[in-house]
Length: 351
Image (tube, rainbow, N blue to C red; front, side):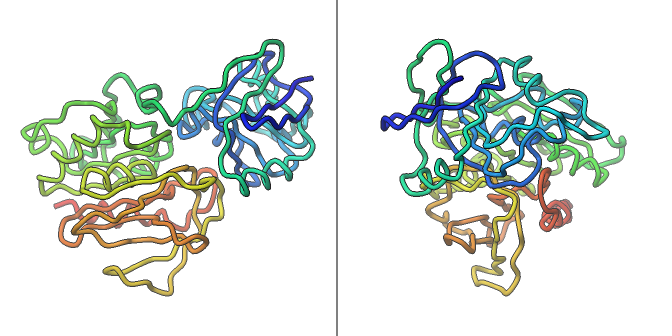
């Protein structure tokens, strides 16, 4: 047995099915009906305890590591309503419980995740901790640079062909499927750390376009990446931001960001397409995982997408330059593929 303790004093008892270790973080919920292996390995969840609202979790086990979005579990803890310990799927390599134990991540089965989710929606995202054997302090992930913890430490090159265009991927906590989506479009991908020092000469000689990846935490702590984006903006080079990349691009261009009440973490967020700042009749269903938003559109940018539920910004596009970003995940996994065309639209801007 264990318990989930919130900083406001509320406590929920539950049955442990993960590692026998206490963990603290920001408690958030996701309404996705599938894709827990991808969600648990999404670097955007760094520093967070994830509550899954779908009632059955673990039923199809954990696939091979090549299908994950990172090399390890990124959440600080997992809360489910009903854990299934008898997985059945042809790709399953181990149970969810065994995976959590092997990676030292706690998991609790708390029957009333509906009440948990309703409480977070009403009060906003809350700090909490999973307490098993030993009590620990609360931890607020919004007060440090989490990107530094999840970004790659070295340059990685994935080559499609010598004659293909070179895309620079700034890794702020990139999901692997961003790289997969680019390689599928017959380009080379050069992944660099979040604080990689970019010079204009290097860019002109080697790079045809830049992608700024997703990632965790408060974007205002990712100062080195913001400064690099400012340098990139002075060049005539296509730039695409994804999720956190949307927020970083906005901050680098004179916009602002703010924290959402409880964030967007699901596979069914509706986003309205805008053209030259005006809404169209097109709506796309998107996968999302973020707790911050672009609260102020920067000068010389149009809104590109807007969330149909709460009218928050879901993307910006420059009025003249080939610079754009989206708050959702066009690479999906898990989730709908409605917006994978974003990559094609972006790559068409390469000269």
